[in-house]
Amino acid sequence: VQLQASGGGLVQAGGSLRLSCAASGSISRIIVMGWYRQAPGKQRELVAGITTGGGTNYADSVKGRFTISRDNAENTMYLQMNSLKPEDTAVYYCSARLDGAYLYPYWGQGTQVTVSS
Image: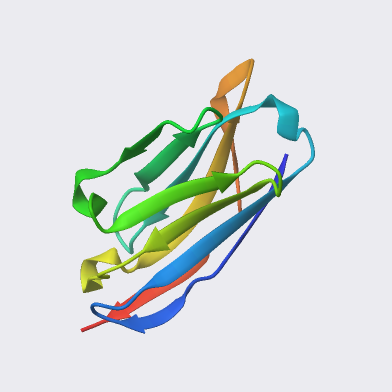
């Protein structure tokens, strides 16, 4: 599976961005996709996840502000980020977990999101 993330950038606090993650390869084996982020000096953390069936989960810090979605026909996952805060600044990575290899996620290359105060 190959994952291509895009959509990051610089935005003022309170603004919005939409991240995209295009998947290719063994797409039929994907059971869960997700967005993670890593800020300087911090560990990578889960932001949001979505299953093939559409079930979602979010980190408490982004609930009510971020929305994860998935277009199975286009093999693309999105993260709509609203009401952005400076603490959302990080490199955002998309990931995919495959049936039979759940413990070994695939990662995209990361896209920088910078929120200025």
